[in-house]
Image 1 (spheres, rainbow, N blue to C red):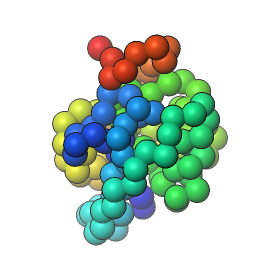
Image 2: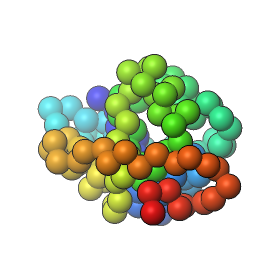
Image 3: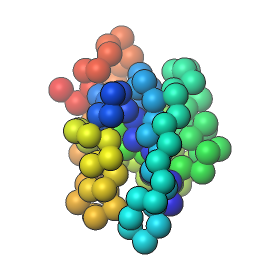
Length: 118
C-alpha cells in the first residue's frame, strides 16, 4: 500500500495542491517500510490526482482539498482523507492504525493558500 501525504517541512499541508512535496509511505502489514519525498510537480486542475494514481498511490492525506480533485481520486479508487494536521509520518501511522478519519474539509475556491478547513 502507498500512502501519500501532502506535506510542507514534514507537516501535513492545509491544501494538497499547494504542498511543497508529497511524503509517500510504503506500508506492509500496517507498518511503514519505506518513505520517499516526491516534489510537487505543479498545481494544475486535474493533474495531481492522475499523477499520484500513476505512482500507485492508494491513499491521499491532506488538510484540505478541492471537490474536483476528490472526484478524480474517487474515480481512481484512491481513498481521500482530508482534515488531517500535524507531522506527515504521524498522519500515515494514524491512518494505518485506523485512527485517522476524513473530516470532509473541502475547499471551494482556489484564491487562497493554506486556508482550507479553517
